[in-house]
Image (cartoon, rainbow, N blue to C red; front, top):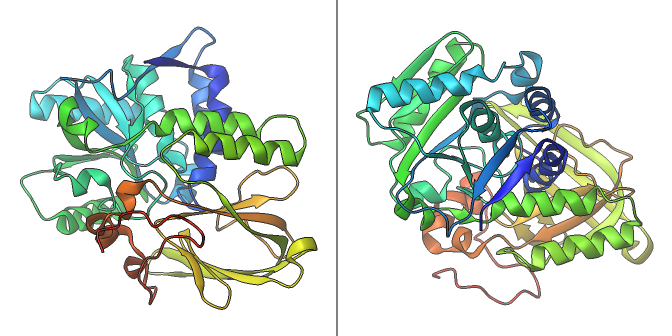
Amino acid sequence: MSWQIKKQDIPLLAMGAKILSCGGGGDTKTIQSLLMSIMTNEDSITVKSITDIEDDWIVGVGIMGSTILYDENIPSGQEGVRVLDVYESASQTKVDALIPVEIGGVNALTPLVTAVMKKLPVVDGDGMGRAFPEISMTTFHLSDIPLSPFVLQTHDENTIIDGLEDIDNIAELAKDFIVRNGGYAHFLCYAANGRKMKTSMVPGSLNLIHRLGTAVKKDTQISRKIEEMHRVFENSIYGKPLEIISGVVSEVNRWFEKGSLIGKLVIDGRSVFSNKRIEIEFKNEFISIKEDQYICTTPDLILVLNEENLFPYNVSEIQAGHSVIIFALPAPTILRTKEMLALVGPENFDLTISYKPLPGELDHETGN
């Protein structure tokens, strides 16, 4: 069943999207503020569920490049409108609905800006089920939805990358355009009809981040929030959250390498975890948890949450001295198939280990 996003829902969606970002995807505060400024109390965005889409022509939209520069050079919202206009003019195809390419971080909300301004619906789903650093790391790519035509729009410039099939080549051309034109751009890609999109996407993820944000922002005890968070995930295509540790961040090391924020943090447990110490590695997103050995790796989700309110930290915010609770969350099954692991498994993040399900979890079918 379709549902409506109103202005008061935006902070809840922003919170849920930051939780599913696994530490990456950009801070959602700026785009939350942008949406709150352009939406009136009467505005609403129709969200189409997987059962509502049939012959709709659906496109993925988002931003690509530096989210830091995005925060410093805030868009007006017209950039997403321009991307859509350029695509429709060049392809002679009318867009019926928008879909997030990823549900973690800024790009969960980016389609909503264009949806408000163009009076278009959005689809309740996405192509990642979390945040990943590369445009190729999507279920859309897995399902052979072509990345091109790939339209990019900065504040002042736009380009269309078309006629190419190699996704890495397209991504490199896009990155080169972005570097030469301000460091980030709005984009449109992965266009398909509804029949193809509904079998390719991670379904229900917009509704999930809304319910997740609602649970975490409730004014109640932490134990109640955790219980509610568990109920949200149990009523989804994700697995049951596994509490790994609660304690204090004792060490953080991070550095930039080839455009990625890389590093690790160490957490010393307290209370029932007093004899436990873990290390979390990150590469734009949190990618692994290690004790004596690896106990969680991508594509499973690592949630680093403030111990006092369950608000999430991203990789650039976390500091020594922070009190945190760490959860590992089984990713949707589609992300753990053999074919998808070839795109988003630990080897893609330079981890010297093959993917294994979380300890105690039923062994999901991974094709191995």
